[in-house]
Image (cartoon, rainbow, N blue to C red):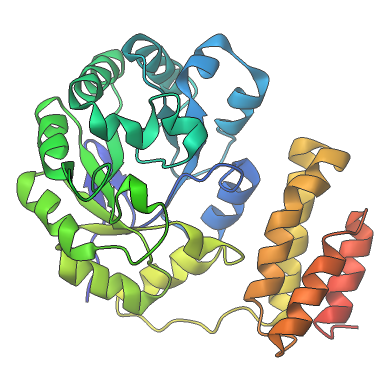
Length: 331
């Protein structure tokens, strides 16, 4: 299966395995690491447009562009068309290649503010937001959504068609409704209805963790690409590996203990440099836990779980380095 680059407006994404925007995950250190390892597309964390427009430091940090990244995708969330437009202008000024609109986040703190997937229940407001953003920026605008709010109103095809008419250049669909959150299985077949409704690229999202998953999701949805979410936890190399597999090329073995150890320490020091020593170590603990969980050593899952608990209580980078090397029998 030969994979071609994905064209989104005037932007060529050099692959069809995309990494989703994830709060607390796809910050600048993670994006730099995943991009260095070959990920074709890694979006920023979800950025609240109103706070971005007001210049709140933590929000600007989430949208931090950095230098040397092959592609910058900034995702905006909000419910006010005016501030979403202002956020889009700021995102373009910050160097965004693509601007993505969040119509899919199911978190209560987001939907409670009538944003994220709550906009699936307000298609007219969603259309005004899209129109405001498209008019505010020269960059291609994309939308990430769910199938609908619940099973009674799976309106993703209709919203996608309206978005396309308003100038949106690509649509990503998570194959669940908002009310499902992350339960059950993603319905890749339902994404085919969105693909049939628009003539722009459609990306299928949800439960894609392996190359086999990606092939099946693409087959069932007819989508042009796949987007990885939770599947990247503890595996920043997985998007590049999956892209290689979809291209029909030989996939290298997953990193061995020494290779993983080097990546973890590289990631840790990048996080410490970005956030500072104290906050950085606390921010990194979730990543550290995933790195331990995803490694095949120790072979006993209970032993891995206990090791994760121990490592995530350590108070310095040097202690993490030493303990991980011992756990993976590098010392």
